[in-house]
Length: 390
Image (cartoon, rainbow, N blue to C red; front, side, top):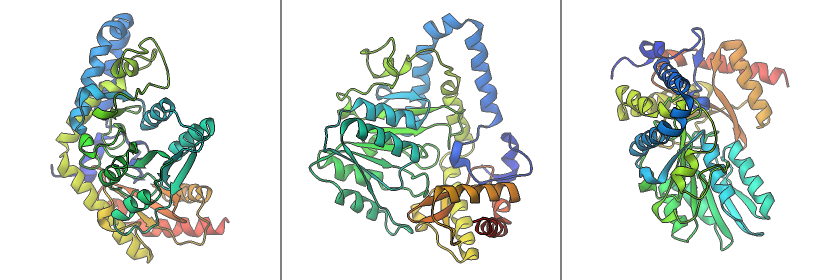
């Protein structure tokens, strides 16, 4: 599809006077998809008992089939969730850890997942081990080597990002899974950012459990995600965090019925996938990655700074180091993000990871080169204001 950038911005409901470079935070839903969501809500409210008791189970499985096919997973082992964090919680709270056992992750782990790991460990006496991943990252294999080096006979589980949220680095998950499972250690992959962002074949990755969001790069309405269980991991029963009427009836039934909730976002998944394909599918993903790479490199050069890794380490998000003299804390990161927004109308994430502050730039179909033209000046202004307010 030609005509990306401003030519497509009208498909979304953005404020006119902003530069939006933070799609990775919560996604952004096109107008046609929230209109479709409202159609589902009207159908739901037209006859609620019929909808929930008679129609919804098959509708959920239809939506699950669409996302399973898109990400390369078996529908009978794929269930829908509100978000990837819900899937991480479902897995961790279904497993039993013993005192002294270890859960291995990296220091790029998403904050909510870090808290979930902490919760699981504190309840059981297990230990969470965060493997440092330095930035700028050299070779992708360095991540796999670092994770493998942390494994021992006490390691009960590895939790690894597919695309790390704070650093935007694409981790070599298939290699990490192969090394871990070769030692009999199960792996949970947090693929929150992966669907619609990178080419994805979940079953080929081979993780015991894989969670991903539909409301980020696929642009589905908020509250859309999935969990896939590997064929040889099904015997380890995974339950939703809310136990309800379908307890003991199997994966699909339990996750499909956890009480009354609005399922309209889930039911838009087939439409979100169709829109993604109309926008170019793989061509869109490659275009987004190319623009992120060129824009990130240009900004790093202008600021005389570093990228978070080699170009091949990123997809449609990229990170640029902010060398400003501020401590690498999330408080300072939030202050700089606020300055970018309030002073320059630029919405982008600033993250504290690997000992530095990093500006994370996200690219989707509605972005083009014009969104980055004034970025060096805006970043310098935000850094000056942030340092001055210290």
